[in-house]
Image (cartoon, rainbow, N blue to C red; front, side):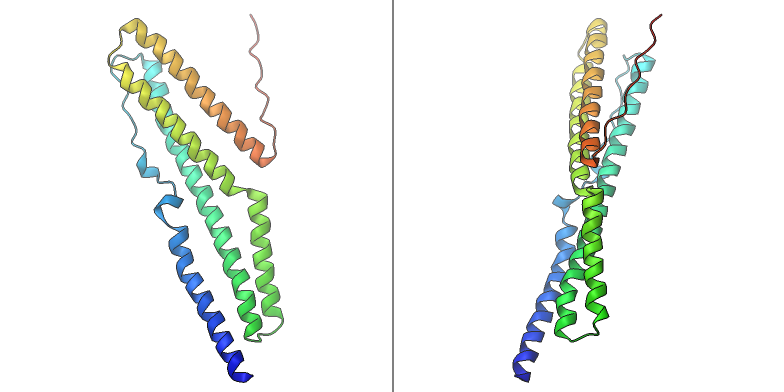
Length: 195
């Protein structure tokens, strides 16, 4: 009986060590994270008006900010998930090793608290929406800047207005999704007073 328990305990500990060794590689894998360096800010073409160039500069800053927020939320999710998972795995090891009764209780509390925080913050969902927003904004900006060099002055003004409207629509849609994930209503936008 004692030898079987020792073999079982050794197997269980080995399994947990393998899981702990594989977990960081999985969580830190390239496809699971958003790289802020992947976005290269674009220079506005010289034939834009000053306020249009300012808008393009602001668009570049916003895209970098969205990428950074998505990455921070992804890291927050990974930290919560990994700490909760490791604590949950350690509960069975603590029981198998006949640790004092408070050890599994503390580990289970850590696991439960991690799950609670994941449900409360919903970092994963917010990170995915932020990533989709950054990709859509980058695409919108890249398409405009690719077309801008070949357009006449009048066409450029018209195309900039279309770009700005599309860019703002993307921000609005994804902002509404973030508020929905958080369980909040988007703030009311006051209407401009009529003269």
